[in-house]
Amino acid sequence: MRARLDAVRPVLGAVFLAAYAAEAVAPGFYATAVFLGTGLALFAMSVPFSSSFHKGLAAAATLALGALLVSGRFEAGAFLGGLRTYFGIVAVLLVLSVAGYPIRAGRFADQIRALLAATARKGFGTRATSGALGHVLGSVLDVGALVLIDAVLRRAVANDTRFSALVWSGRAFSFAPLWTNLNILTATTIILTGVSYPALLAVSLPFVVVGLAFTLLVARKGEKGETGSLPETPLNRSAAAVLAYPVLLVAAVAVAQGLFSSLSLTVVVALTVAAVVALVAVAATAALGTRRPLKRLGAEARDALTKSHAEFALFGAAGVLVLSLTQLGALAPLGRLFQALPEGLVAPALFVVIALGFLGGIHVVPMVLLVDAAFPLDAGPAPALWAMAVLLGSQGVLLLSPFSNTVTMLARLSGLHPIKIGARRNVRFALVASAAGLLYLIFLTLLLL
Image (cartoon, rainbow, N blue to C red):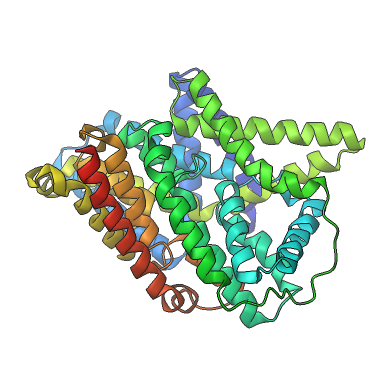
């Protein structure tokens, strides 16, 4: 049954994405109906084959929806309208899963290996170099950057060294969501708080630069710069492309948002990334005189759609749960709690709630949407302040929560339990990052309010 359902997922997924694009550019009843219909179908097809956590979340969502229907408070229009937001996040995630297509080509993987060897010869070891690459590539590839780094390390160093390097790449990556507009949490936060992207960069980059530099310095401490059996692959222009591509893609999204300000950032991210990747595939096909680049892109896209069970199960169930609780009025106490706080304590409270919710098993994006449903985040006196409260609250515990994508990917690559590769190895880092984030947030509160 799963094989038969998975066979039709790419077709349904393609229709789902096409309807998302059509609805974003030219909103209409039919595009919305197709988008929601295919999204609900994929959600129903995903839950039975997802993890126990996702099944439990779906069960809780079903109970909440049942209670809402019995209460007589169900408003179909508002419910379906809210569900579009959650399925929109899934659409963006599916597009972002192929954002790294250009630098996943074989010659670029060789250049990543060459970069690792070159930095080692200049006194940097695998931990510091993996951290730097994890941050730069992670700004575009998200946790897919860890897969590329692991592919390089797997053939070059011993397992213990590889595990350590992967952990440091995850630590450096944890700073990327604070600034890159290609991260779904960052994009969602920008939309909900109403902060402008330049304003977010102005308040986040000082923390990112200092925090990332300190992290890489600690990673380098005690290393001898050895990289095992990495071959002496010469650097060429492809190495510059590996480093330039993330920056250019982030800049392209920022420019596109300025040109199409009427569209939400998540829509701009999806359409811009899709356009850039398609143009790269077409250009590569024309330059090489072969269809292999297009076939590789098609294979990557089909693979992303086939393996999208977790995304649909998570955000579909979270959407049903949050929207049901909202219409039931169950989130009102949380809203009253934030409203009762003095203005200067709201940002620290948001920081704590996001961190504890993430640790408690709620994925950070649904968690932010849940908080916004109870306490609209665009009502603050300083949008940048509340945006940083959300982002810093999640950043500090990103490697502690076994429910984060980063820990899940590290566990998959290392073969270790999420607690062993995540929490046990990152308690001190999480404490330092959280303390630093909270102090910086207090500083911003004094500065902006």
